[in-house]
Length: 162
Image 1 (cartoon, rainbow, N blue to C red):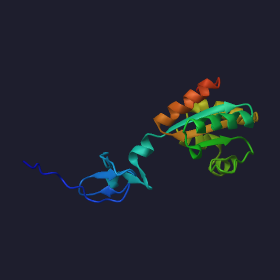
Image 2: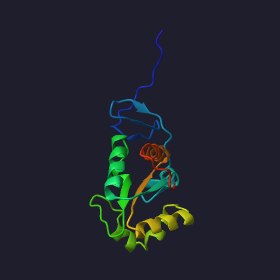
Image 3: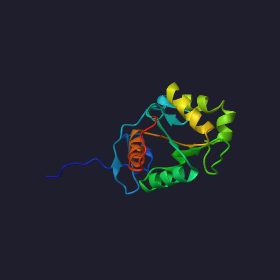
Image 4: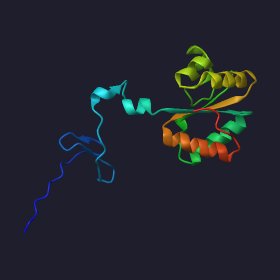
């Protein structure tokens, strides 16, 4: 007895098969993730990406300390483009979130407010920046925030803000 099987439609890697509602990964395996309808996308980002964003900010006494923490995070698999080091009049070449852009966007308080940081924390971060300290800002999802928190705690830092 022969059991009929559904034939898979050839779909390019990571492309959505509109008929079956799945994607195919680089190894040819099916990913049957729920596909978010286009109507829930804004500016090229899905609604879930926009609402699940978590911002982690911590204070470091020196540029070297901040860079060491970022290097450790990179070694733990975090995406460095999501992590910025910010300090007054400091410009990190590979980061779009730097003092010049922050000033152009209305200042540190405005930018941190847009990232969902509380007013009390904003005041603490502004004071630290005025004192010449370095802020490490990571913008990502819950999983990335958890990894960042783990790295910071291992380095002797307590979680400053999310």
